[in-house]
Image 1 (tube, rainbow, N blue to C red):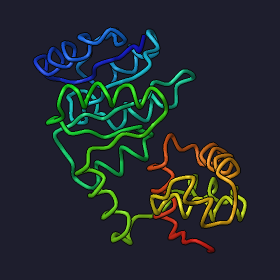
Image 2 (tube, rainbow, N blue to C red):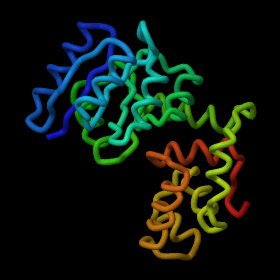
Image 3 (tube, helix red, strand yellow):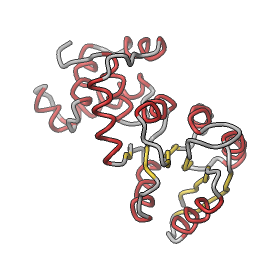
Image 4 (cartoon, rainbow, N blue to C red):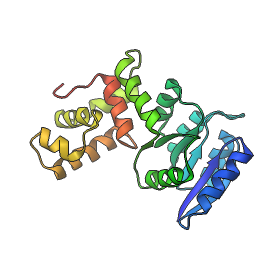
Length: 219
């Protein structure tokens, strides 16, 4: 059973989300809240597997709540569900530790699939958000790593940096192995270690760090 916390200031939206999720035998909504502070309190008390997070709510925004939730001892996977896809919101959500970013025009089937995927540790992003993110990361030179992110990047070995640069290009483990003349299992180990060192919840978050650092294969 995958347990879910709904965080949205619209009662109508929460009801629709609950109906879509609880139609599935493996999903259960533990609680519904309408703002960030209540989301943090509920997550600490109930320890849900996944939190569906709106960004704009009275009494505390979703970015701040996401950052707090992902820092909990038993953090839920945070899946942002919002009407806003502005560049700064996407980047802020990724920096805060969101495992996914969907728009509210998502279908019930797509939502259910996304909840299952983030629970399994995968990143899930709406196609429009992926296109915007790639464009943002590759064409916006003003974005920089924080001091903490740079310190984490500096812990990577030369090989891990090479692997990270190829992850940022969207290559699979098999493709990276072919490019670096290695085995897929070895690359899988490198990816696992670099994700841990970077504290990245998924490959998109790791790619964001690589892009912001200007990391290129062989650099």
